[in-house]
Image (cartoon, rainbow, N blue to C red; front, side):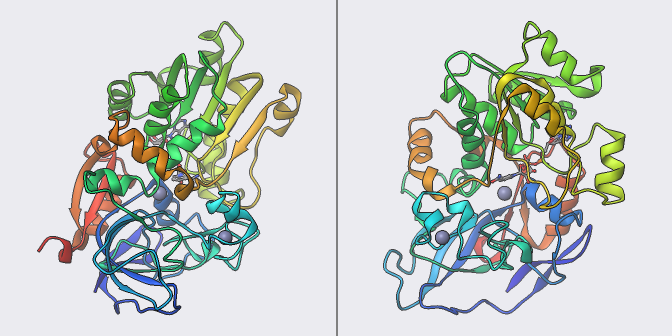
Length: 384
Ligand SMILES: NC(=O)c1ccc[n+]([C@@H]2O[C@H](COP(=O)([O-])OP(=O)(O)OC[C@H]3O[C@@H](n4cnc5c(N)ncnc54)[C@H](O)[C@@H]3O)[C@@H](O)[C@H]2O)c1
Ligand SMILES: [Zn+2]
Ligand SMILES: [Zn+2]
């Protein structure tokens, strides 16, 4: 089969690999019909995630058709069209039982760090991902969810990650009626977080980024204010000024460790790797939230040390909430929002690329070329 193949930082290609096989009675093999490239894949692509092995196939956002099931699988049958959440989750451990599917204790040998994630290095379990024609899906009775007949498959594929992540970012912000919410990052996750902030009752939503085309997009898509941090002296000062010097009620970090905007953070975190990525957006979020406010982090950071203004967290009495999204927990609610027309995720898809051209797709998305917001990959077997 054809699959994306990691060769080292900034080097990926489409290559032939054996079709995966059932290894456990509760596995399924899914024939992929669409997969996405995510901002999280860029951390892998840029070489920022430890133990990313050459030969691995990335891809934690995919949908497809069930091709084969193990003997103990009860909830799926061959031919079902399924949304596969990005979390690999057992459904039975203490964390899964609380709905914390992103924190499963069974699916990753490095369980104290993170749960299992498809296509996300050996720090997240070493599972091959779905930027391929076929993928092995463990715990097949837990994650995969049947795509409703009425649902457009372009919407379905975005339910594997960015929609639940944007929604959970807003949910973790504890937004109250009328709150001012600032979202750092106008990538797919930040765009969805801004859109979802309104569902929780926000009174004002402000997005900060430095890519004009994304700011233009989010202004229209999420009916919010959007500003370029390159055109302001200091984004923290700007947010204080625009909130009567109180600061925002809620700040959402939808950027993570690949942030731009601070030469010191970029050099220490992205060039010299003295810290686990650049925490620029997190600094701005902590420093521009009001005293007693909430900072919600969905941007991904490396598991070790970061230069973070923890003193300001203490002195301002800030609540920090952060997690990988727990996709399965949120799916029923999000499917309702899509059916009712309150969420229209597929509008963020800008590029539809054959899997054979995966290297170009990574380059375009990473370098933010051609007004790219969300690229999806279509395997050859899904185009026949
Ligand atoms: N927690 C989760 O479950 C989860 C799930 C999916 C993605 N993520 C993470 O969310 C983050 C965003 O993902 P994405 O797909 O939208 O990525 P993306 O790379 O497309 O978007 C990131 C955006 O942040 C902007 N940016 C860079 N520095 C900034 C700064 N200092 N302030 C404001 N904006 C800045 C970039 O210009 C870009 O538009 C990534 O870190 C990704 O790993 C987390
Ligand atoms: Zn993702
Ligand atoms: Zn579990």
